[in-house]
Length: 349
Length: 277
Image (tube, rainbow over all chains, first blue to last red; front, side, top):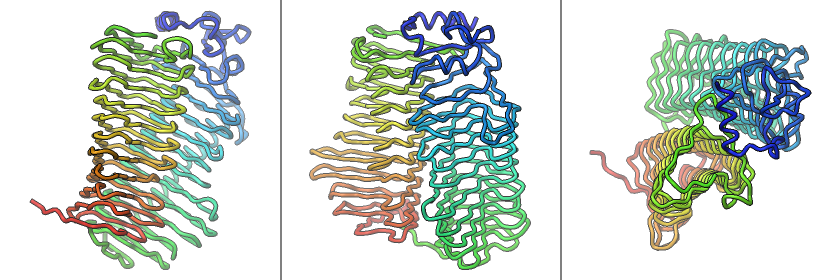
């Protein structure tokens, strides 16, 4: 029934043979020797990608597995709702992936894919300009779920689930990215940010990972900025958010209107040399084992306003080894040791 | 598709309905809408390049776009008719060369819309009444929202505007004898610049209500005596610059419940305290 709808709509919209290369099709009953048209679809993504023109679309017609794919040009792979489009990676090589994207200036969109139970990684974005991942599931990979490591690229991950991967659920390096309604759960690390990266996380869940959100800046050429809004970060084995700055690096982390629960600590920033600005606004941090917010090092600066910090254990806010606080006010801290170090009340304007 | 009467084009969930435009048909638009007082609904479509315009609303009373993706055009949605209504919901307008939405002078609601990786996310080019709610405007190379028109009224609610380049998140240029109003309510404006330019006798009024603005340099810049800022319950951050920078700007009306975290919190700013009731 779904196929007949697609046929009808495609005909209605003038999907003629002259546009076949702009829009190609795969199906469980397809054959890679066919031209990947609506009537004669291909069986796997690899053949369809070879047949589609740059900027075109690979459309999945029915539920099946469609095999790993390497993408070297701009295209969209679209599995409509109600269609299961699975891909299993078979290589143990950490540099291999179910979907491997490596095309200069490529703009790639992936929608509705299920990358499951394989080896290697789920999606590696090694080279390209823009990547959109929507309505996808990436799970049980040996290495990373999604590695967005194409230099100076733009990445959007929306309405997707990344879980049970041995490495990072999402690895962001040298990239500007937005994660909207993304769940990263039960991975080695929830989200790792490296290099010169900007990351915005909105309305997400980062839970039950070993590490929650980890941000590294290892030199002055790799400043990182991470913002977390309306997001639940809970039940990591270690900390909710970990910031590490060395060798003159710089990191800005803002958490607002979010919840950080359990784990050893809520938010930690350790600065050897360099600087870290940590801003926690209108959020709730609770039930951690040691510290709600822990800043360590002379380059670490904290701003907290409008938060509630509650735990039966440890310290609410800890500032050590020269870490400074230009604090706001209106925080409520219900912890055995509310504050270790000096908070400064910032003026109101 | 050329639409000259009230109609709904519907692709239900589970159906992939894609349109690639052609520069030589339908006035270089994938969907061209042109009919007096017509009401048009587009649902579940994917528009993938091929023409300058994705959806060009030339004449009509109301346009609804639900659950659509529009990409690789120059202007994803262009709203030409004055006083018309347009609602775009649960849709993604991304990777368009030029603009996500050009409002013209329409009454526009953007609800749960992603405007990403265009040059401009939204261009308010007429006396539009624009509401943006629960949306993301990110990684547009020039501006998130560019307000160049006189007498526009823009409200942004529960929306994240981040990582937009060049000028930044919201740019307001008010000229002529007009008032431009922009409100941010419970929203985030980050790694952008919020800039107001009001050249006399024009006025630009910006309200930040329970919102957060953070930038590397000047978080909020205001220029011209007609540029006025209203602050309530907001936080403003600048890592290395100024929280609010005024260049002969007008007053900042405040309820004294805002926090500014910046090396230089304010520069040449004239505060007017508003009473509590």
